Length: 344
Image 1 (cartoon, rainbow, N blue to C red):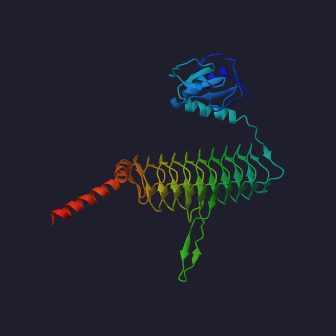
Image 2 (cartoon, rainbow, N blue to C red; image 1 turned 120 degrees about the vertical axis):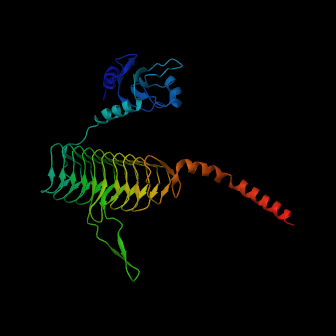
Image 3 (cartoon, rainbow, N blue to C red; image 1 turned 90 degrees about the vertical axis):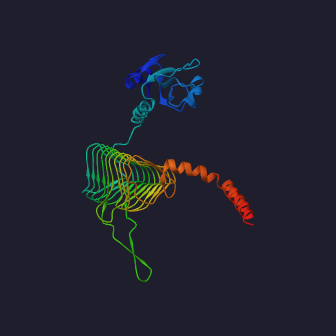
């Protein structure tokens, strides 16, 4: 793809300083950029690269004041990160995708593919599946019976969607993620064995959801496991049966949520966090990485840390005390010796 600095400036509603006819081929990292690349500066600690980069165009905030001369053409914008997102989307859309159904894919005669659907080689679309307009299905994807997939969905290679699950419009699911595997339900028996409890529910994934690679979302025992609109899930996350995740909640990698937990909207969950089952998490909760949440969080818009998790500010104060425990223990021991001497 080739585009001029002026065209980019018009797209971003920016202010251009330099040659408007500068031709851009691709976005690049500022420290690795070559002529024909466009880069950006949003964090001041990267400013020094602005004076040495080989990039042809540099995206900066409107209030950026360089301390040295910059040879790149500048485009000043209100919000650098939002503009970068828009640019990456524009460049990404130029990557040519396969259209139609590959001759090495299998689509059941009773599956319904709407206009603009593409299906890659060795993908399998089961009976009764309904695939919405302009959905992209990469190679080696499995879609089970009666699965409903909305419009403009992207399923990357190796995605597996079990029977009866629902995927909303504009959702992206990355490679090797599994939607609708059985929940972890087993009944203990008198002889010490465990009997499997049938998992007859499904998973409902809302609109504008993104799910990272190698994440697993279990189907409900009865009813639905629900991932609501706007949720963003990282790689390697486990979401158990009958869990509900509220709108626009984000969860980082390696987090695990046990069965029937209800998480509110606009929560931010750090990596490797764990949640026990059958609890509720209030809207706007911020749970720091590696925390263990063992009971319901009822206070909205609060931060939590530790295992078991408690108030973040209290946790930080406790950490100060914890780091000083060896000195405190030594002082206590010395005081005990002094008290013992006074008692003689």
